[in-house]
Amino acid sequence: MRSASILLATLNARYIHASLGLRYLLANLGDLRSEAAIREYTIKRPALEIVEDLLISKPRVVGFGVYIWNVVETTRVIAMLKAVAPEVTVVLGGPEVSHETAEQEIVRLADYVISGPGEASFAQLCQQILAGAAPAERLIAGELHPLDQLVLPYGEYSDEDIAHRFIYVEASRGCPFKCEFCLSALDKTAKPFELARFLDEMAALYARGVRHFKFVDRTFNLNVNTGVRILEFFLARLDEKLFLHFEVIPDHLPAALKTLIARFSPGSLQFEVGVQTFNPEVQALISRKQDNAQTEANLRWLRQHSQAHLHVDLIIGLPGEDMESFGQGFDRLL
Image (cartoon, rainbow, N blue to C red):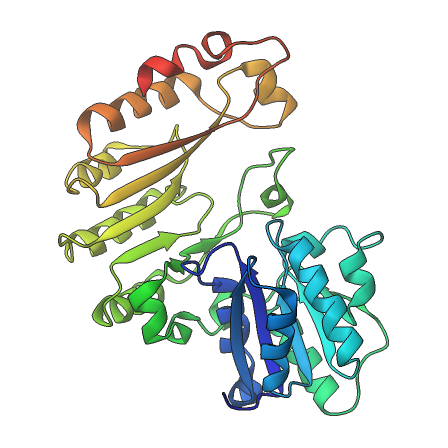
């Protein structure tokens, strides 16, 4: 294992997951790309083993991706890392440390926290640290660069990733909804990547053998024309191994999308459907707009006329409600 001045690390829930965020950071390091490497672990691996593995590379900077599923374990790793190698600069990023920093132990242990998008800000911070000009301010607001200025990360997936792990991709960032319970509601809107450029990257992944594509877009079918072009792209490459995962808006499924969805074979499509609730009062309380009649019609259509596997997200309704009262017969749909 070669030395690396910069390590990008995270603790995944399972080995089969691969961090898209770390690969974005790596791809956008510019001149420092050759001095950096990714280290991914699982939350089950002992903290001592992780620290020992990190220090083999003799890093000067270690950036950790922090999420709700790994914050406890990552805190242990950082506490041990700073105890045995205090000279290593620890940088945090990710949703779990982007919005609440004042009382978190993991923030106290780290040297820097980058909130929000980190591609440009992490690269700049690393340049400053390695040049001996580390900034005094510990909390850094991530700079939101236009998406067309980002280096896309898909070339950072290794052959081992492609052979053994989920490959995460995104055609857009952000979410147009403002649900009160969701961190995605803090996004101003959903913004697309340039589609031709994105599809070129998907073609390259496909040529390398990728057949499982997990889209992390919050609202894949927000733009119908984009959804149509992506589905057409994969239909042209449909084989017995292809698997696509999308998050979809339940009340926005026009005929152009239905026509294409119906052409996919069993086992090739999985839709995560964000219904949340059918209760208008709950919808108002959580600031979620939804056409309930259209949602029900689309769910029935998907069930009866497509081979897609459906995973439907529901939240708890009003106190005392049962599934029938706030689901409007949802149990009969699926």
